Image (cartoon, rainbow, N blue to C red; front, side):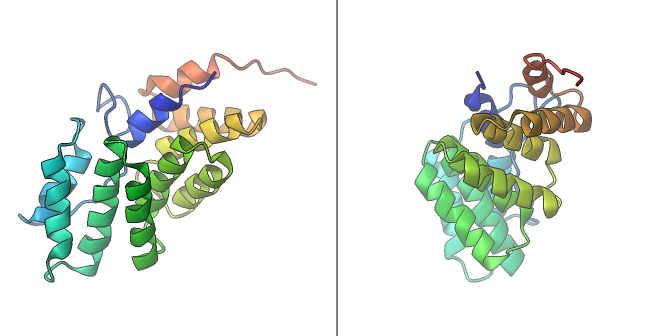
Length: 188
């Protein structure tokens, strides 16, 4: 059985070894602002605190954010909310980021993880695919998430291909390799 918690933990940036496993699909913000602090919290492997989300709220309430930083802050706040189990609020943030910038791949990547947590595998497959098409900075994570969703749907060949792609893209990340051990390839 697939360990969905592994995907969600990786998507939320709480992988046990940040060097070996992909972190969240956070979006970088430049400068010393609340938006930057929000990014740093979303990019950190530690469990987010309510204060981290408040920094994001404060950043979004300011009128001096650039359009890119506004989108990034919605993605980053969504990551923090998802890691705290606030799935609906996280999805709202990812949706807002997508509405502001339909080409923002990390919004699709993280929304895919959130809807997978809701057990909506069909939508998750689509979101992970869009993240890949828009060149997410975390392609291994997108392939892994899509593999989990495809396996949930019974699409075993597609799941195998995505686990393989995730393992090839990030060979130090153990979860895709572990999932592949459950498959047996049969020639016909």
